[in-house]
Length: 319
Image (cartoon, rainbow, N blue to C red; front, side, top):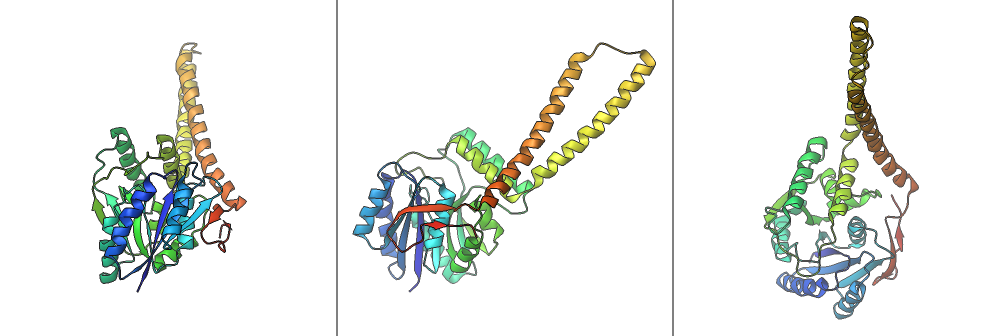
């Protein structure tokens, strides 16, 4: 009998938790030949999420909970769940049922019968999502796959079922700045992709604002590509060459037609343009430097405040 660990990150999801548990009970009953543990990770919620987790734990011993001392982010919650998973298989699943539990039996069957280490999911459509958000998401995947050697599948979800060997490989990447979609691709292993149509949330509201998504995309770009640094260098070289050619042109024109006093508006525009490019390149370098700074501080990825497993370590330092 194999054991399947289900990692469920939660942030202010007290309304969605009972609905999710009810749906998962149907799946666990369907897969009664396997053992399950549901690992709920409370990412510093401010509502009654932790209380709901404790209720589920008292009702069902398969339900475990880990509560952070503050909001460390979904990536930290995923890492904490994988760190405490004891099953031969581990799955990551959103509590809002946008990751349909009904796919789990098929995912498990594939790992049992085919030569794959992981079964991952991706959305084939983005129906119900704002058009501007869909456009930006599509653009992000196209951009990052052009500049990164690590393939990140368009529409990929965190929802996947992995064998223990892949879970252990992911846990070895204990970096502070985490981007799981990139990490899953970087560690390799054979992955089969399942597609499904976009599903609306079962309850509550999304916690991913446009601002959070923007910074999350920056995390992925800076974490899995150094192309922006190379781009900054190339832009610098181009502007140095252009500036040198312009200087020669100005000197030649002055020698032929004298010292012109006209043209100061265009000169001002050029100065502003060059200054803007310099600031852009400095900002790119600063973004990478800030990531390096945070990594060297070696702060813990998460800090536990409460847990159904009191013997677990309260923090997890970087590797």
